Amino acid sequence: MPADFIGFGYAMTVAAGGVIGYVKSASLPSLAAGLAFGSIAAVGAYQTTQNPADVKVSLANSGTLMCMMGYRFFNSGKFMPAGLIAALSLLMVMKSGYKMMSQ
Image 1: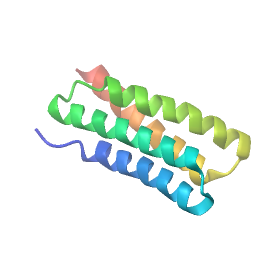
Image 2: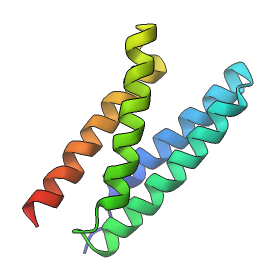
Image 3: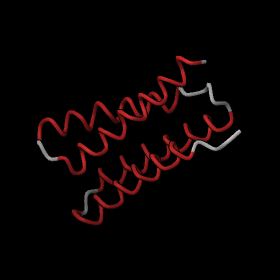
Image 4: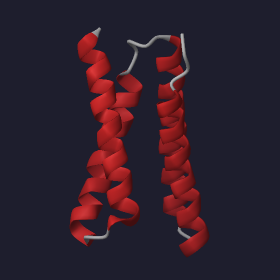
């Protein structure tokens, strides 16, 4: 069974976004949220790698992040970083939802 490379890539992107937010503006909340959500996304990707039908963690994590960052994007109107993470999270929700429905 192949590894969930898309899920691991998403996890690394979210974690890297938190680190970049910290480096650019010394924002500890960005660092904490990025590393927390990135770690949970990595756990979800690992679970999906072990059992492709086990998408609950990945779906909950990306859905939460999609809502949070989508809200920030609509309030600020700035695509970077909130809009990008919201869009990537939407794609992950669609991927996980498709896997859940097809099993």
